[in-house]
Length: 507
Image 1 (cartoon, rainbow, N blue to C red):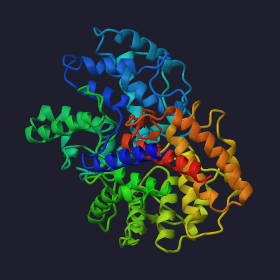
Image 2 (image 1 turned 180 degrees about the vertical axis):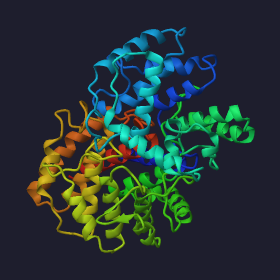
Image 3 (image 1 turned 120 degrees about the vertical axis):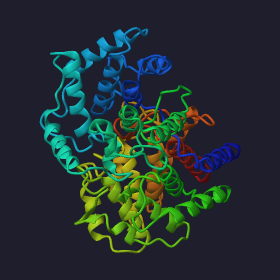
Image 4 (image 1 turned 90 degrees about the vertical axis):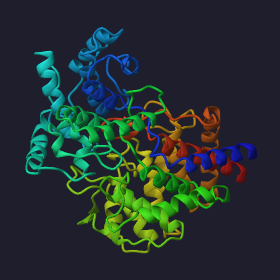
């Protein structure tokens, strides 16, 4: 057990020390497919096309069948990309299977827009419908009618602006609305909105205008973004990159949830990251990447991390995202985020600031079981639940939540893990343990004994699946499709395993 604990700490130390390369993000079907469609020809991208075809599920769609809401964008994108790759092995069959899949799928946007819809759905999916209509004739695809007025409203606003400033949130979906390269300019990393899909689309338009220096910067960005997937295949891209603020912020916050933030073995890489965050945090706050718009979520987590490290953190950087009783992630967003408000609550309580309205909002957004779901940045209810429990318990020594504890214990699967889909995942099991760690502190002997038994079963499940330096692959984070921020997830997995190991030793 001691040897495994040391191995976990060593791997965590390595992960934290690597977080100066822009971030590690798993490969994206959507962005890869969009990049292939905007690429000049099939030649030279055969490996990327082969990778795309290999990701298709048995039912003809792309993406996890556990979460059907997030399958439309990658499936539309892959279908339209493969339309031009007919000579490649498997392409024609993949197109036929994808066509059948889309014909039989219920349209989740027939009457309303779900709260947890993917990023940019109102711009992206109607555009795909238009492209498919011209390419595939009268095939009876879903038409997503509830998104059409939202798309038009966005386009009307965009039409009134000659050029969006670098890092504007709407640039992240430029590929779904942009036609003139003059409406955007690559940021200092070379990206359009930290999006490979948007950048490849902008590049394709810019090439026709002869914008050589900017195109060169975009090319350099795309090469780096492709490497971030660790796929080893040129032309395979992540859903978002870089994430050089989000990745270190969430990793250190996760260490705190597991009781590892101040561990001596991690002190040096934690100190380096904290020093970087302190320099980067401005009066406007922080966004997921250095050259992207600030948002309440990244700002709140950064404030938490800085305070935990003993640094001065000005709450005013968070307050200008406050509108009424809640915090908006980005101004003008379609709907608020539960987890953003959870993180804002945690930051306010850590800093000793009034937070009654935010606390009431977080409490009001539980489901009937007392848990938190319907979250717009993560598909699993275990993610906001773990963070909400930590935020609500902050500064409340006698805090207890019997309803949430009962539901969390009840949700453990027969195999010992937790998961929102059909199978347990390491990441979600870790979140369950983070929540139980907080709840255990206010339990009597009988309750603690019951929790210890649950944790022992979880540890057994985790030990059977743990491998040193394994690469997480299950996408649970919500972007334009579900994606996996690899290091962020791996830190959660290792922290959860370390916590379960220590729990077992203590009991």
